[in-house]
Length: 280
Image 1 (cartoon, one colour):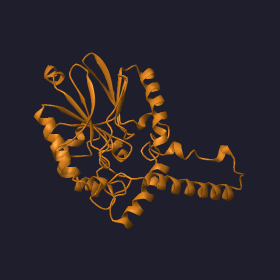
Image 2: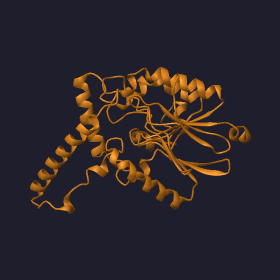
Image 3: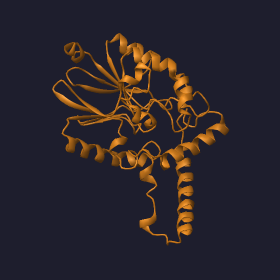
Image 4: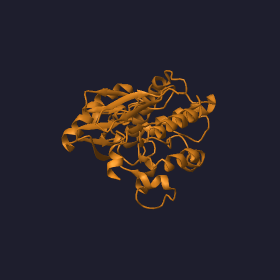
């Protein structure tokens, strides 16, 4: 059984951000579900294994139960494929249910935290990527989630997802978020009767995800490299930043399925890693 497993190609996707089908749901536009099913057909045709590397669901902008019910056809198919699901920051509400037996659907039996696996003599670490960040790894909602909610309110008025066709809305939301954060800090400082100083200010940018603040992506590489050295693995396979790329042979990012992008990673049994775009 182990031999068969090691001789199969491994496919990795992440950051689908599947929502409840409403105006905030990026996955509900651009025929995403059909493209995903075509990709899953391709994985099965190649006798591949599949890892979903976090942010499969979008719980920052939608009710958890509505998302799960809406996306049950995808969940059913992933369960039949025996897919492994690593929890991300946008679906972190599920993290403390890992190994509890409280999620009766078989898909969630394969729900896990980051893990390592040896392929072709190399040690791979599979993680969503937010785990190396001091703010994003917290359980309690932060400014990144609040900014996503603000974006969702705008999307409700617009009637469709802001990011369905890409666009520059992140910059607009970031500007709005900074303004809101500045006003909130002033309010807190005045309420507590303390002077405004660096020690009392939140670092707003550090609490955002790299997709919300793309300038943070470069800094993330240093965090991943530090984690690699500290934990002694060879290759990091991550998502989170929405930026599909490879750096050397130690870092590979599975990108996302947000907007017009549909990225994935293929890992061959000899440990060759390819970062690819899915086109039917």
